[in-house]
Length: 324
Ligand code: PMV
Image (tube, rainbow, N blue to C red; front, side, top):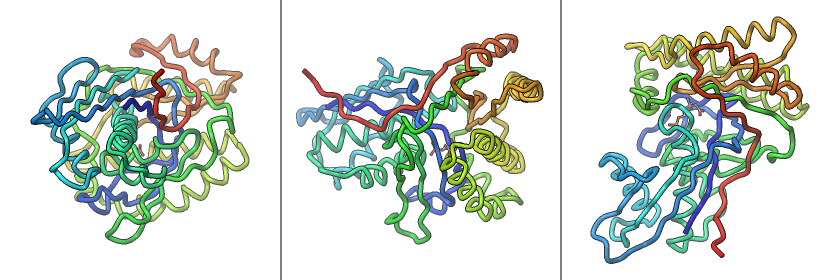
């Protein structure tokens, strides 16, 4: 069974868990699903295998990656006594560098495994399952504009993503400025725990999230680019401020990351509207509109630390690929 899912970037960020066991977020989040960042995963059940086999981008996966995937499949099957699987997964973009490969990866895996195991899960259930692989994966089940809901209890009944608007609602563009192709040093789960345990600002981050989510819903409902962009940029910088206030500090940026931020602000001062958002990595995603994306991309060409720019619009949710 083959499934294709796309990565997403959060406009209102998620950073912090209320439970690690079930991977429950401490706040909601809102994201857009990105067309160009795809993961294609093929999963075949093979009762003759004694262990799961996992290939990532044509290479045998590391033991810790295989362990995570095997646990995820046990969870989906409801038992460790299940047929083993042969899994092969390909990304259309650099893996592990803060481009949300875990989001598209676990969304594609959840969908392919559900089909192979004969589970007739609806999208909400798939979203709850994908969340246990990676919080942001819950959002990649859907296309376009997506909100991740945050429940309040110890169970995950209310922790799933819901679609807000599909990919055709608003022709937004995202320019992804790659400043480093190497995988990041500190993964998001470790980073989030570090922040929760040590940042003096963590409580106010959680407390103010509802206001941010309300404002973003409002900006999206009016397709208000200025308001959406300002809110998204602010949420990203608030998250990175929070990360910096952790002990030890978490700094995912490199000098080129900062250079890109300044460049975008300079363009904005000169009348070209664009906003930045950054996840747990050094890449900068620039939110812009279709009529200015070409000029902005050209202007970014003067930033020496950018290795590559990926341009994308919004994409659809996870899909099973029909085999002819
Ligand atoms: O769920 P994870 O482990 O992919 O963590 C996502 C964290 C951020 O990308 C930084 C923010 C977000 O909401 O996607």
